[in-house]
Length: 65
Figure 1 (cartoon, helix red, strand yellow):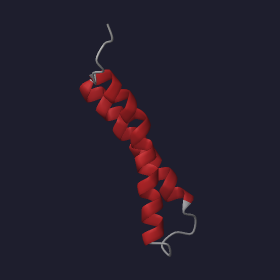
Figure 2 (cartoon, rainbow, N blue to C red):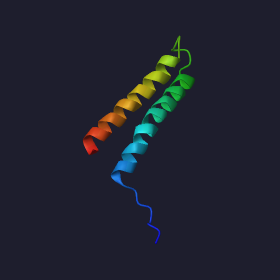
Figure 3 (cartoon, one colour):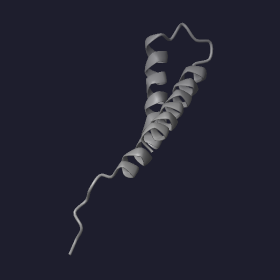
Figure 4 (cartoon, helix red, strand yellow):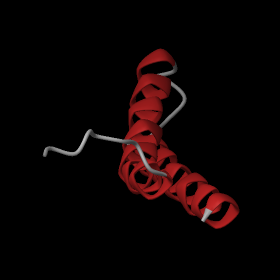
């Protein structure tokens, strides 16, 4: 008998730990594209967004896990 797929909290937290840094980097790319004259090196905004996404994922795992 096949088990029906269920979303468990651990599955969501695992997906969030990958998705939030990617989303942060994507938001950094969008910010650089909107404000392209504000940065000498746009890698800082993209990397900073990814790091902030990683921090958000860690906080989410700590609060829910």
